[in-house]
Image 1 (spheres, rainbow, N blue to C red):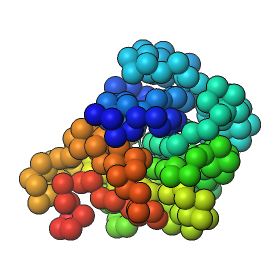
Image 2 (spheres, rainbow, N blue to C red):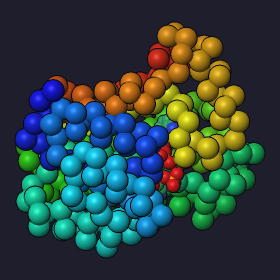
Image 3 (cartoon, rainbow, N blue to C red):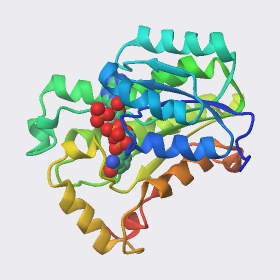
Image 4 (tube, helix red, strand yellow):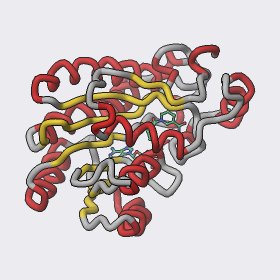
Length: 254
Ligand code: 0WD
């Protein structure tokens, strides 16, 4: 396809081929988008580089989003090569695994702040820097989960961080709308990725969703890839400040 021909975007948060970021990146590349990738740490860099090369990407940059200097340096580097960009995917979250179990109220201050910093504030910091080099018609997208809206077992501090992320999406959409830049989130159903592995009883959550979702199955990487491509492309040109559920309908019943 050619739906994203002529568009340039930055993909943040690929850890491996099962990452949601990679699914969305592949869908965008298949529609002709030109991509840059950022990753956290050299261990992941080794996994990301071949994936990036497979879609013809030459911009593959290390960026720890808890570091403002790293964010600025990364986008400076991209600006030097491309000048302008058209979209950014933020598919990054982190909370200390130790607190993705047990009682939410036992979350210590430092673990709370770290989850908020990496899972919510980083999207704001990225959008501030990246919007300064974004063409009109641009699009920002982040990833969230139903645990932002309701209590889900073990999601705990991440649910609170995702609630803040979803509110951020709405405020960011208000800030950037006049520049014809859109900001949205996808609330994905559970998918077995590296990050999901950190949540205890994740297999049980997958099974529960499969049994109870209207579509009687779990969402696939391909499902999320397609919806992500839509929100990053001009197909969704009138959509902003939206949290779009891609969960086989589970949010309507669960
Ligand atoms: O069921 C799921 N997998 C769902 C995931 C359902 C709904 C939402 N999501 C969200 C996640 O919360 C996250 O925001 O989707 C996003 C992508 O997650 P993923 O694809 O499930 O997970 P993964 O493939 O592990 O990629 C997330 C990556 C990290 O991987 P690990 O597992 O090593 O933490 O986020 C990156 C890292 O590569 N990351 C960072 N990148 C830059 N700077 C940082 C950081 N400080 N921290 C984590």
